Length: 474
Image (cartoon, rainbow, N blue to C red):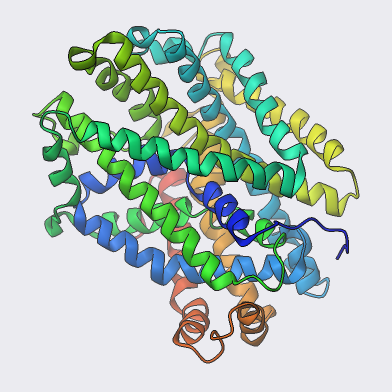
């Protein structure tokens, strides 16, 4: 452990940075639509229970490992296991996963930035054309947007923990909240907005089934950045005086609150645009909603506030989504950055140059896999359908590997690191933790049903994604 290791300057800085990693594109669009289609308030209740009783213990375990080791995920597994080579795979996977997730997340962030730029130039009518998105992602302009987004991300990361990540989080997260609240306040004044609110919050337990429960748990797990090594890395930048237990709760509450409030923006806007909307027909894909469906809704607002007014609202919306994407992207790339710095003993600038070249090359290839290059577009076939390179990266490293990484964390802290050491670390900065219900629940859940649930999700995802067979009937 380096005595010169950087740390967050405050608990607030850590919470905002960690919340920024959790609050992403899916929170703002995918979650509200998924909730509406799958039981409204019933889905929200189940989601909250999953966050509290399944996700929080895993989050605390990740944070405890990171702070105790004061290292990146690979180093944490290595140090805490006493250089046990059997755990090297878990450590390598915990670094490789965010490296690859950064690739597809960068592609989507570039698209968002492109739409943000287009709204700033007054081209909202073009964005609302259903055919525009397919044309946009195959234009050479996306590579210029890619350079700009890459420059912004590296500018933040090169500043390090305090002057880069923390400073950006302290600006971007409050700005995100202000923009979100402002848009919600405006949208709720639109005609028929309350119809969307009712669909969103009124419980419909008839829609709750095994598939919905699986989706709610997966959404909660992915939304909180679990299994990506982010929380382990960020926790390695906080001191022993900080309260990990309280910090984890704050991050979970912040992430869930943003997702819930976003629903008060998206669903009322949809129902105002089309009062006859059938929620079951809405796409749960954030990409489809952001780039194809919502621009039409934003353009329709011109009947009330004119084209310029609608363009301003659209700009604010895409700025909001861009802020969410950037905070997540920064946290994702920080994991392999920290690993290179600590394991290869290189400077932060050198590590970022290596990652800019490697992730940049893969991002370019994934960007070209939407029709620019045939062999990348038809990269391979599995699950009964042809898949692009982008599809492969997303399916393997986001949909499939995250629950496996979470399972590794559970098994490691309980059976290799041991419960007593986990409790000792979590009690530092949280005087009432030892002997509390929280301690007993965390130790019990991590050693019993949580690993089983994560194993089921992992196995079923592999079977469904790659073999088109659902092993558990959902």
